[in-house]
Image (tube, rainbow, N blue to C red):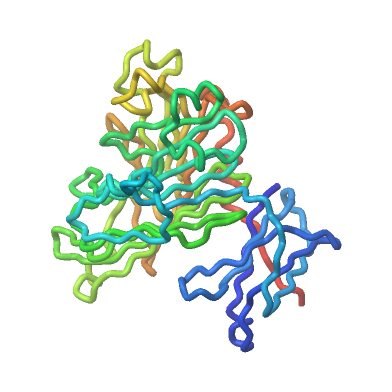
Length: 386
């Protein structure tokens, strides 16, 4: 179910007509799809749709492209937002925010950063030196962030709405990418320009980009970093694709550059009463899986409003990127090295105990992760007819 399929369109551009519409069918049945502009030139680069497929199954989908816009009503299954704070409290939507690295605009961005939501889960990425991935857990499978905006009221909680379920503090959070220096994780403090932008908004997938230009290393290395996060309808997980562009003077030492990601130990610093029977558990393995389960307050400043939340988190990193595994008081970590491009990719997922249809113990959560890793490791293969 809901297997993501991407059809790239460079050959159509060369043919000399601009794609403005697309129609996908399977056995004569129309399959919802979307056209996406991935490079910001206001022209379609990809057709995206979700395939109803099982393991080892083969299906034939017909994709018809048109120079005319195709109007197909598709109920949105994805929500994406990047909004500003304003005196009228209207929170205008924008597609991009960019600021000097030394400025502090964290409180000028509503929800404190770019947000994404599928029916199962919600995420936001902070617009500051941490760039932490924060989590929104839900009881019901539906889109909620247009109403709660990550700041669920007491009334909404009583009505069954979800809520922010993670307090990262100084930890890695859930799959955040950090610098790795002197044997420990570091935030992105020495940056020329920070930016976030919405690449595509749905209705079936969203792709957002977090970028840092002119990142300076204490050893004189300078580079640009672009992180893309893809969230698909019907999925709880994110795909993370990172590309780096070293400056000319730094290329010779780039092969030694290390970063890190992983999951924090939720509830590791709390007492038994806060944990509510959910003892912190977790691991990091050289096969690429790091996972944790625990319970803690999602907002230390609003304990009277938001109760402790039990959650499970996981990160899968393909083995070719793993330089080392580490564990400290707060985190299970992968130390990662980009490939020769240089780039890397990995996957992030989580569950909330509050989900009506989800995982409610560490045992259940950990048991699900091998299948999840296998699924993201073997995506749908797309082949043109011979």
